[in-house]
Amino acid sequence: RPRVLSGIQPTADSFHLGNYLGAVRQWVALQETHETFYCVVDLHAITVEHDPKLLRKRTRVSAAQLLALGIDPERAALFAQSHVPEHAQLGWVMQCLTGFGEASRMTQFKDKSSKQAQDRITLGLFGYPSLQAADILCYQATHVPVGEDQRQHLELTRDLAQRFNSRFGKTFVLPEPYILKDAAKIYDLQDPGSKMSKSSSSPAGIVDLLDDPKVSAKKIRSAVTDNEREIVYDPERKAGVSNLLVVLSAFTGRTPLQLQDDYVGKGYGDLKKDVAEALVEFVTPVQARVRSYLDDTAELDKVLARGAERAREVASRTLARAYDRLGFLAQR
Ligand code: ATP
Ligand code: MG
Image (cartoon, rainbow, N blue to C red; front, side, top):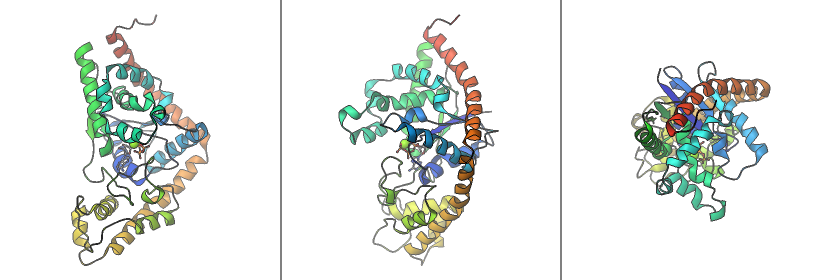
């Protein structure tokens, strides 16, 4: 079966709506048809300053959310990235193949580093996409379900795989991005020109899955729109309204254009009310399941340990082959 790898950072107390609609929802669907590897990317989480206690907590909360959202540990290997040392090992190799200019052109790096003083920007943040390439290539993944914001990193991963293959002999499968057109990018409710983001959205702009549903409903009702009245799907001109249509589309299965027809003669307030209702209905049972997974952290840690074991089987084979091709002596 074709392989899938994807990851999510434990950098916040909750996933947001963009994480779910852009990525995790696809992760769940792909379990049916693919061999799936999903990781909480704790190594990536330390590319910016972090608090160890919070990281530990958020790694478990992330795993609990993935389970609550439908990742089935019998089918998918669900693990913490740091439990599979091959990621860091192959990550180094990928860094040695990545050009300085190439890494400098990554827009995520430019965004995340522009907000910090020079000496706070770490080499880890600069090398983030090379480690991400290793995450993917360790598993010879054919498909990588991510949001639209990760497309450039996927391109880099393909370039690095190709570069390695042409210099050292065919070793890596070239992965394809798996980015669904609708809901591939959810925008900040208060700033619909920017993506909803764990690290840069304001509290009012982000819908956290684990937030009090009443608070989320209120945020949706206060979402920035425009001073027209008509509900039209036009992401360029009407970013706020279009964002709400995309969210409702994901929950109802109607396309944004069908919804536009449904709302003829209705106002922004009606749309917001329906989005808020759909969201509350979705998150309420998810939150109950998250709480129950977090009630038994021993069991949760066991799930992650089993996932890491399965992941290592595959990743260690890939790493051994890559090390051999690079000319490293075999360990006797
Ligand atoms: P950070 O701001 O710390 O980078 P993030 O919100 O971007 O956090 P990640 O953990 O980096 O979250 O990304 C996890 C997955 O969620 C990735 O596949 C990413 O493409 C997807 N994703 C993140 N934000 C959005 C968004 N606004 N819309 C759709 N998908 C998103
Ligand atoms: Mg991100």
